[in-house]
Length: 319
Length: 319
Image (cartoon, rainbow over all chains, first blue to last red; front, side):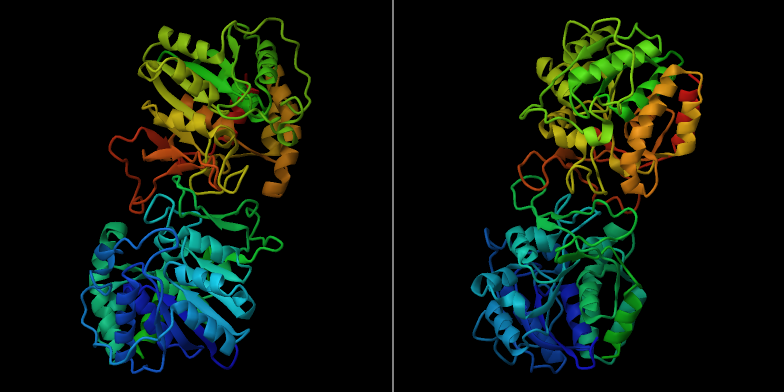
């Protein structure tokens, strides 16, 4: 990391683990959160914006602009999100302050493009929802990649099963065409897939640390996690939570470092076959150690240097 | 296993590891090899039949009928095989006896169907090439599955990369439509994918055991492996050989037992997208231990009870 905080644009579908990731970003001195765009996914883009504004209000960070992004995906409509995972409102029914301010006039893509000019060459992009806004921004301004330092995204599954189909993870599977465009854009992309997010688990003890924190944001997120942890009981056999979006945030912030993360040819399956929405990484020939392919711009994270949960809980509880 | 040897039909694209698997089958008292069908894959169906007859002649097993199966795949033509892996003749240039007898009059599908009547209910099918012959037999006689005890096949990749594309393994990738038909036929299928075959490795010491054997078949296979092991140097960083077809043979014979092998929904990607030829197993929800899906007839082997190589080398060397 540089000594000055890196400017960061955050694209999200807030969402319970998005909320935890946002809290972590707000608590992270390594980055400066310059703007947030919302997209449909866990909940609608409009609801995600309300949730985001509520959390920023709790954190007294009304300086961070929030723009509503795409409600529908590139080739099909938003289908109602994942209320069984994130609740009807995306935040497990936890009351957040009514927004005291409005969202930005423009779209999320407009905000991203504006920030890319204000921080040309240094802007970090962190995307933890469907990649519809990023694809829209690329379509709107094909020169965008030249001004972005790096795109870190939560999504996909390399050598593990998907979560919405046998092969597809929700963020990529919701908008495969958008994800494929983001993979193909030539900017440096770091993909944080289920392979690593499912291995980083937030336990009840971590949640307790947030629940007893002096920070209203931490306490609100702890209340949301009470809902989220019920969903994961069937997966892990106990109440706990995978750390999808927070892991991508910690990697973007530089506090968790990928250890195996080869740059390889990467596309997204945009057919209507059984692989639709699958991230296709060419991981052949890696048996003797991770090996980057010449010219590959997409890096897939297959392992990291340390578990995230303790650091995450401490940082957010200490906000 | 029962006390009487199980009757077995072997479908193959002989091939160096096919040859090793055939030698193993001939040396296995647990099964009785009742017929062999050949298919294009590693080499052409016709060349595979010549190789098979040559090996059977060396083994003095001219009692085993050999039928030539499909040259072309269901939706496209045979493309010349894998001479860089198996040599121009499929057996690494190793001289085998000229066949002293002819192949069967009918096709491989005809032979399989005939054997299924002769051994109705007990016939084991072992397929280690593209599944074109099996699909042809299903098309020719839809009642075939009712007379087959089990189909064991080498093919596919569940949670590891493919070998002919990022996602597809050669046997399945050569004829995805055939493989999809075999998966859908309702008979019990045991899939032995790259996940386990790449973890079973034949070393130089194993090859030496074959090369110094009193068996002409073992010595011929050892000579073929000299060619094959050069190919795998790039994969493993040393001269050795993955045991694709032999592992499927040992599982069909019952001498290697699957330890994690859930029965799950399984299809093959038959699109023209990046996943074409991929085996799609729904492995979600297996984190707390292997779990069979109700009604699923396809079992995918993800781990086995013991390494194969020592047993394989000893049995084939002792033929």
